[in-house]
View 1 (cartoon, rainbow, N blue to C red):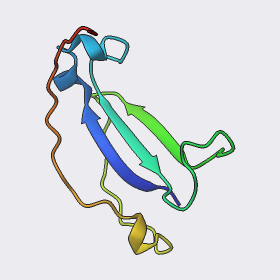
View 2 (cartoon, rainbow, N blue to C red):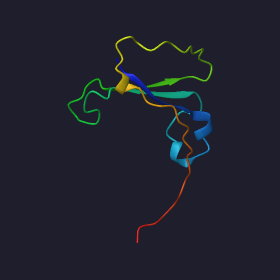
View 3 (spheres, rainbow, N blue to C red):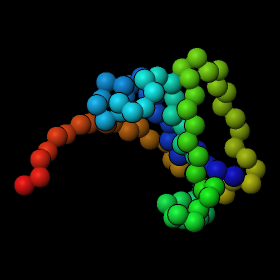
Length: 88
């Protein structure tokens, strides 16, 4: 099974020019498997990204029984900042 990695509230990111290609609202949820090479071109199922509309009625589900302990990611809060710099 894929483990939950991150979730972003897109309405909070919509003020950023860096997020202009994303939907202006809803949740972006990211799931992945630590058991493979997620960023390798041969990986065909090690990650998934879902967009849920702001009006979606989401329910927290219990973890799957077969999810390995090493696939769990500790909870944390991210803070985004923007910087503009020019190459020298």
